Image (cartoon, rainbow, N blue to C red; front, side):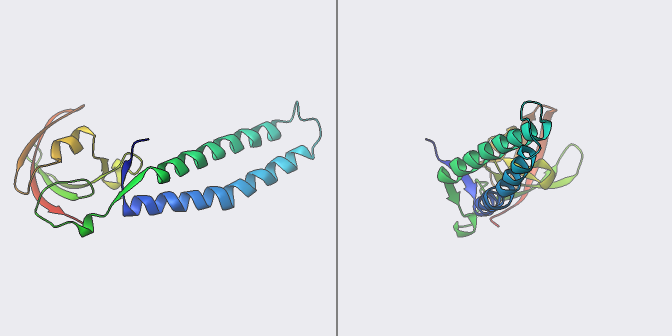
Length: 158
């Protein structure tokens, strides 16, 4: 059972999701199953089958989240000396040398990654290209969309 790196905020979100699934979602599904059962014949009861399927998905996600929490290797980057090196959990400010656009990414674990929130998986092409680099380094990263050239403007541990 391999440990999965996760940020402090990522672990907090997983724990919140687990509480929601167990304390809110599970009772709602049980109530929906009871309601559907009261309608009689279960063989042709679509509400019952839908509620049972929803229960199956919810219980599966509960197990998945509990497993992730059990395997979590929490890395708190605020307690690491800031020497300008890109590591797991650091926030990297980049200048795209091809388009002159500025962007920032936080390198996170697989289950926290969300590109819309600028949270990228540390083992994604961009994550791999940035890990170990330092402030002011020029980085060439091969992505599915082609080669991208960046300059690391700033590295923060927040």
